[in-house]
Length: 94
Image 1 (tube, helix red, strand yellow):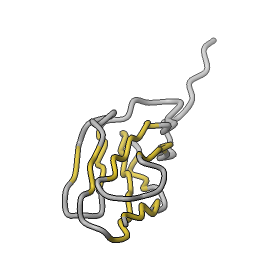
Image 2 (cartoon, helix red, strand yellow):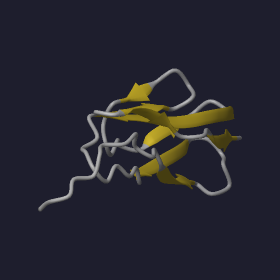
Image 3 (cartoon, rainbow, N blue to C red):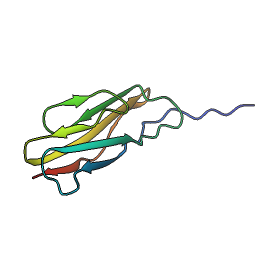
């Protein structure tokens, strides 16, 4: 007998780093997708950088902020069971 795990809504997540650490523009944000979806494959990624631009790549190229301000970065992922969105991460640019 085999057991199959039902496809469940993914758990969106990512880690990030910014350069330079002091936050003075231009600030480059690098992200790594840490989404988990144990029973079925992720079918889409949607990054919102908080400045009006987006990416649909699993592992997008680093994003550069040149205008001082506070930006909220989110990741929305989807699989066969549905979608999940991360809480917003704040990026401050001086």
